[in-house]
Image (cartoon, rainbow, N blue to C red; front, side):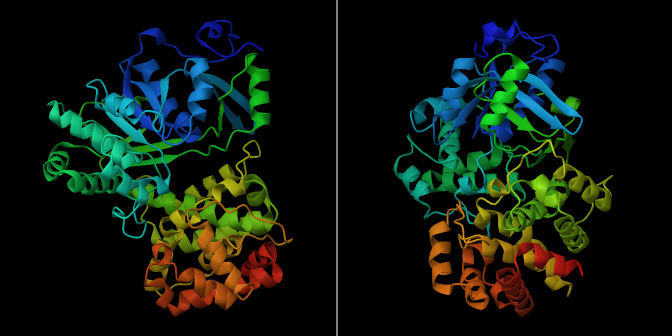
Length: 490
């Protein structure tokens, strides 16, 4: 079948939405590090909408920091791809044109650095997941002993981390008398702009203290809160898009209709008209990101571990299970008292909307996918809430079950004795500790709570926490995930 390209775009059915601007005139203004499915279903679609409203030099050059797969899929399509929105009422398809090119950092880091350093680049944005920041999740500080950071200090012209690449480009701009670009994190990190600023500053200081001071004085690192469910694209999705599009698209993205983006309105050299197409440009993002991390992401992770263990492949299946839906309601009852409501938001209504989104049967968001990288996610998504509840002397039964379900999951063996493909930077450490502890809940919880980079030094000393986790973990081993969640509801 003919492939989606600039040439074949003209032959699409009139019912399919396509770029409503002269794409041949679009110039790059944004470099995005980590051009995965989420960025293409969120940042790139907001930018697409902004270009249709107020055309400007805001095309996106994406960069893959590890593999060439994305470049190899998009390059033959002139950067074009389809976005299939899945709603209960039926699918909606559009073609996105805001991505102009994709670079592969390991193949030629100098080319990517030059693109970021170019005067026309005004924003460098990131979706590199928590582990891509080379930081300690518990403190938010740069890990100076991280292998990528050590490499980048030894090879400043050929870095491999996002932190090293951004710093290298900023160093060139400083030398050439150019203003720094805005560096904008779109990852699920608390205070992501502040964290990114600190990491870049600290890394720059290891290279050149005057560079660090220049960045601190002149740079902009807006915090953001992003929200949209974007499952991994499957072969079945590609086939469905092909049937709807009438063209072959090797790089479609799938997502829910809902989207949200709160952005701290601090930019060095302008931004697209995102605020005119639904983004919330605010002076303080923290209340929005705090609400999302604790209520959406915390629930997502807890549901992923429990749902996977209970045999549910997707979030919709897991949240559609009446037992696990009741677990979510109980979890939110523990979380909501720790969350200051952003202006105009009723948290109980937000929780109800989350459950409806989770239960959207048209979205196949795999529990296994959400379960990845738990060592990087738990500190932000669950453990902060637990600390606040303990400080208030409040119960943590549902939160403790979320942590215990993670512990049960990272043993690498499911409830039927099958292997779990645990994807995590610490998976080897988990396997070692789990093998030593076996199915002894006290031994396993003690072993995993001893990982300081996840739990710090305080939580393992909190008897109310350790007892609650051990109790729930023992029940998971004895009764299974669904029965343990049901017991909480009773």
